[in-house]
Length: 222
Image 1 (tube, rainbow, N blue to C red):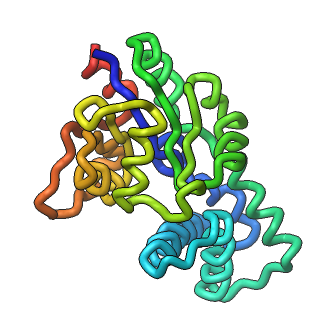
Image 2: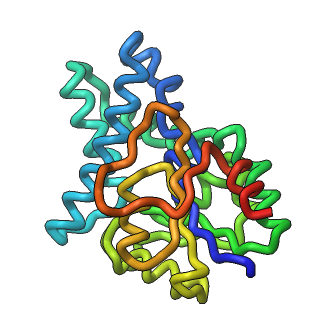
């Protein structure tokens, strides 16, 4: 039976650490470390805002995380240059396996949606630029709920939007916390372990499937 599949965007479909290429002129040899911290910090800020019920959209979390990183690395950047850097988030590349993997999954008859903490318009633009958008049936953002993954409300919203049931709705993510959140909400979940050295959180929750990329996922469901 075909599934409804929600794909995390940042880190699963597109590579946020690729921002390092845009940071070379600013951070030099520390560009990749800057990009990694920026990604981690914006996710942390979303978590905090969800817990405190002080919602601001993901763009705000991203901008504030940038400001933190500039302080952390002792760098200065004008507001105008910060905005130009923020715009680069709309130009992140898809991982090499994503197009092929999504094409195969779509041919298998599954309903494929992007499911993101980012605002819908920004995510659509990002996925359009990465040539991923035409392969998806929809883009679903948490923005309508004014909270963030891994809130259980968010994963239930994915099921409602896709007319799915817990046993036939899957979350696909490279983020262990996202997988755990989906599982705790009753969904099925795939962990995309892009880095063999990455670890899954040692909770009493395990993914239903572990794959190295979306091509492997499509083959597992042939």
